[in-house]
Length: 141
Image (cartoon, rainbow, N blue to C red; front, side, top):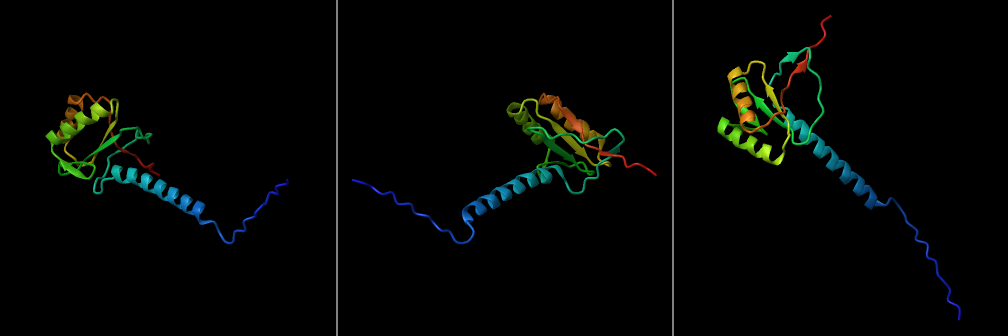
């Protein structure tokens, strides 16, 4: 007895949409995640000071930006905070992300006293990796 194998050739017409939809979805997710970091970092209305030793740093895991406005307000993730609220947040950050980095983005007209209060909160939470954001000075002609 002989069994013949039948080979069916599927003929496709047009463009296969399943892989195309996958690629579009992955691209969309990529752009959504990268824009979140840009939004977190930038606080509208803050003019960073300049320094000749300022350089671009690499992003770190668990990195938090604390924005100091020129009127003394403290902004963290688009939310205005008081010093006690900031202290609670930094204690939780130190607990869940040991060795995490804090970057203080202060306006060039911000009060030094507020920056010292934020540094004190970082110290009380035992966060050692604290830095200030600055823009590099433009070369004068």
